[in-house]
Image: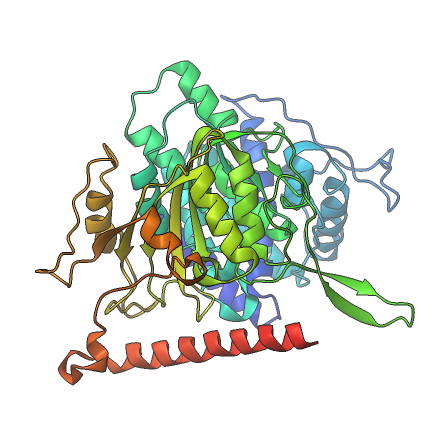
Length: 503
């Protein structure tokens, strides 16, 4: 059976379950639980004989029931009817209290498929395949396909954890991570950056045994505070042959912004969550639930602010080793916002070599109305002079139109940027913009030119918007409609932020 056929069969069953009120995200979670158990069962049999151990069923207090059955695939797949539903629910509760990757996968797990006959259909569907015999590329492609379909379900909000894979691949192709180097993502979502970096390293290097072991177990380090997203990331990574089913998880459930844990990495590749404010929910003395802006008071930060994006940018700077490289997807406000934003930009240019900014169009993300950029920079040691000398901008926004369905962005759309970025020697670059070629998308600005701009703004553009002057070059109607929707949503989000400040 081909990977596309398996995806289709698994997803067709999701449509059946939706009639019972089981959403795409809940279904994907159940697939994750069951797939993990099935693969563990396969690894305990010849030729693997891993000897993985699972606990007995536990009571509500977390104690093993003396005569309880083992929480494994063999016992689960043998049950039928009400007994199946009861055993599955007890199994999930029992495994959620375990340590290591097992506990991380099953954290806060619940049975969302209440109809035993439909639960059995899902179990049988997974039981038909020998997952351990599949290549990592096939298993990974199947699970990635499910994650992308889940992200398309806009009502679930899952899209905010899914960065377009073409964009991730382009970023990794520019950074070109090397073997035996560490890679971090402080808001890793479902693991897109990790997987693209893994694929790049495998495809572009002849790895020896030591390098393969390092890549599998020591390269990747991440944070993801949402339990359901974290378990999907762990499963996604494991299906791509990263980590061990009985090993310690390389993802932390902690908020990465709370503190500096002291670890330093060779690369940080990230798309921190959209939304400007960091906030926490509190209950006041009157018993009323309120949201309060949350600022992170860290000595390693240049500025104390409740702006989530600025906090992530400062945290990523801290995470890097000297000469460590970062590529971070950030919204437009980080480029032009005054106050703390201006100071963060000045310090970033002074303490790192902020060498490249990729301007992105709308229509790329499942969260609508997002205008984003990718900042590439290299951390540097303390120095009295600013490390940033020139910042190269690639405007892939002006006169560029994409939608998620009709005209999605592919890696081919960013090939010119990758070539101009010149990963082999980024110090040897040539502008495509000039006085004679004002339509060139690749242009540099000196550090001094940026400092003279109002609020040290990096929100720089120079291309003529043809839609304002040339009616013959208007995009297709469906693209125009999508852009209008995204602009309205972007404006609404900005208005909400103003109201929040006033309150």
